[in-house]
Image 1: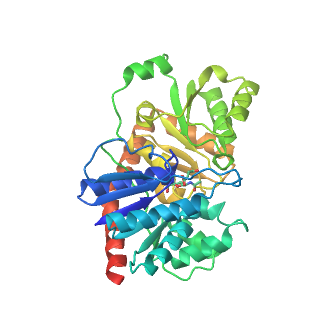
Image 2: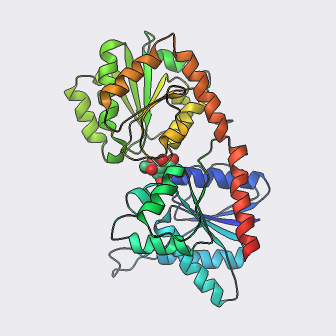
Image 3: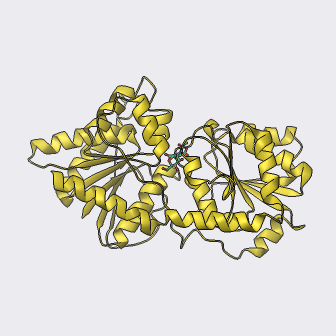
Length: 374
Ligand code: GMT
């Protein structure tokens, strides 16, 4: 198939899933065309089946807000026609689904029928999409898509709860490349970070309020009172300055490292004992899956789709959002040397359920279905 993929090119979960999907499809012989405003962060290798088309927005003094959606729709029209694409797959509803709708209408006037699949990733539904500023457009463009997928049962249910959706939504969970995300031997790195064999706790995110990073730091501060430990924070975003201040207030700076954005997250995960994800909302929790693939158990909230990934008492524990004390109790239980090896093994076994090899064929089935229905 010739597949157009539209996504955010950033390190964020939806962009990562879209890019890894495109790479996996290219390896299976499909021709994949990424259409976005800059080179996707994970589009980092050469394959004859992979193409990247940049959306360019000319500047003009009148534009206080550059009309990205129009430039994107025009680019989709151009690439579908020129490359003779079979299907367009847009990731994250806003503004990709409505831009795809516009492109589809334009192409129809030229005698081309292009099926559009929209994949809902999370905040496009649970936070931003619900806002009155976007809701009518989100509802309309989901209903106008030829296929709709969501990354968890929870996100699917929430979409039906909050929007007037008249079509089926198929659940296709996030997936993981177990070749890339696996525990590597990084003993020298571990020795440098925790020279006295302190336990290593890790959190990775985009440092937004929805991630509740203050809870990460409070959990760590309480664990550290009972057990020598260190905290590694990977990623960057708006809450980072506040979190640095919180570490100072709690006087734990010497045991906390802010590592910023890292490409090889798997190297940090390879030395970790525990992953923390206390999010307010989380449609799936790709960062937790990456940790589990590196044999790291997870302490999480019970938000959204996390419990569909993190099995309570097996791969880690889930607690009510904000229940720091419960998370601390559970963290100490997992970090006990008598329990840790079992949780590590269970986390890896669960990650295998989301192997890229098992999940990508589900998207191929959806593509074929919408193509056949045209
Ligand atoms: O987690 C984020 O804030 C980034 C966001 C995105 O769309 O880039 O991630 C969402 O999509 C991921 C991939 O499907 C999911 O694994 C994340 O759980 C989801 N984030 C939220 O729902 C907050």
